[in-house]
Length: 315
Image (cartoon, rainbow, N blue to C red; front, side, top):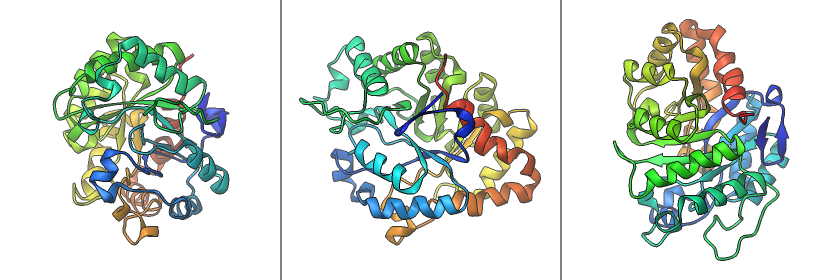
């Protein structure tokens, strides 16, 4: 099964899926420090989702973890009002976003594991595990996130990674990652595998920010899923680079390990807030590039079949 905020579904019912998005980030130190991160408008998020749904979008993985003003109740409202399935996230972002007094740095692996398991099996905390009171939502997390820094874990993230692995073993939850600049893929997979997480249950985020086809093929050969989440954000690289990389990986035999998303984590990326490229860009502009490049037969796998496997809980 796949766990959405509205309940568990059959993977066959998931539909076209963006595997890395952000819909609501309503507070926390990172948002206060960078106002462009503040995504606190239900109306604007509805507008983005409806535009993408009109292009065929069926589901999104909402990658906002605790500490950014993650809003379980808001995600419930968005899924109900738009009909788009929302898969929510527990875990943490990179360590640089959390104060030295945060529980990441003081709780034991066992304590962290229990926090994560409860968010997956009971319900996500409306207050982002900032405490001391926990107010459970009916919405449960469908992925657990771990984030590394550039070529390293970051403070206490190695221990946190062990807790993420333990949460996977306990629940079967898929593991999604933030790999800074696309680095540290093998090292993170090694640590997760040592804790009992097969690479086939790991979705590597930002991994295409390291556009080395040999490196990406190595990660895919281990069974990991690669999320191409740069489309439309040409300040990092043109879409032609992503099309070329995807083509090379398909030709190398890794079509079944590819996922896509836009990672529109800033107000300036939303057309509903006067920016761009907007959530509908992926299906309206980027996917047609793949089709025009002769990859029409592989597009359904990238958008539908691969997410249905990648986001399924392990038995």
